[in-house]
Amino acid sequence: QVQLVESGGGLVQAGGSLRLSCEASGSIFTINLMGWYRQAPGKQRELVATVATGGNTNYADSVKGRFTISRDYAKNTVYLQMNSLKPEDTAVYYCNARGRTRPSLFEYNDWGQGTQVTVSS
Image 1 (cartoon, rainbow, N blue to C red):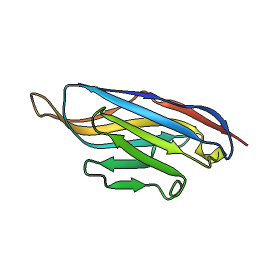
Image 2 (cartoon, rainbow, N blue to C red):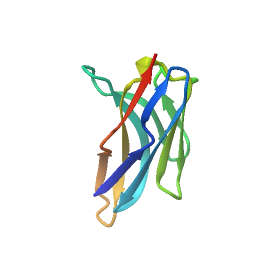
Image 3 (cartoon, rainbow, N blue to C red):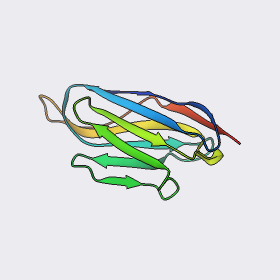
């Protein structure tokens, strides 16, 4: 079992910045991919950004140039720096991690509980 704990959400004015953090803990053998997804009211959950072990990143077109994802491998933590926030960025942001557990080497694909980001106009 892998647990993900997010922090850093809140209320910010348009044009402002927030930094989300997500720490993974538990029976972790590997973390192959960590990422952030978001879900706005009445909409499906969508990809925001992911970062693979080795550093390859992937961003939604809507956040390219404004958001930056990064990882601290020693701390099993992923960050999302969000700049130039827009009201349409308002959503619950979920952390995701995929890899294998120890000692079983079972694959996991786990989610955090989510953190609310609200951008006022």
